[in-house]
Image (cartoon, rainbow, N blue to C red; front, side):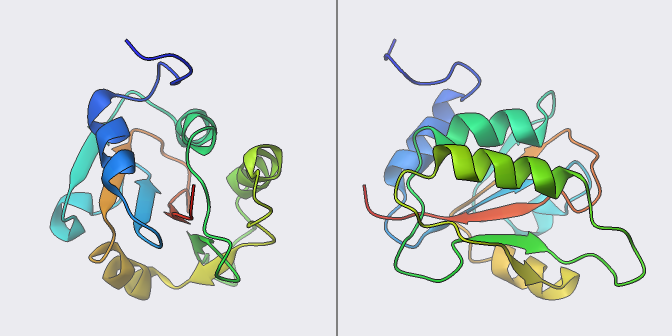
Length: 142
């Protein structure tokens, strides 16, 4: 056992985060994300909601402060309301971002988001069914 590692983080995810280098990307995805089709590495966490996982990850994961937006979201359609889950993400990021890397989200349309997913170091697919819950975190320097 290790200390100070949130218990929600499975060993495979801790290992992947440790292996990631500067500017590598992790995607935490919702249940409907086509992770298997786009992942180099995929970890399934079907019983977990994204905000719970995001809170645990942000406690140990530095964000990249060498870029303007180390956190990216899948853009919703202009005719759709702003997803409520984004406010939760913003609260968690403001709480845990120790390097002042997060200023605001960058948004990517759905199909380009999938292209970015193919370059991500790891995709963690949750059981969360929130619309537009997918989030990209770019790793910074420890």
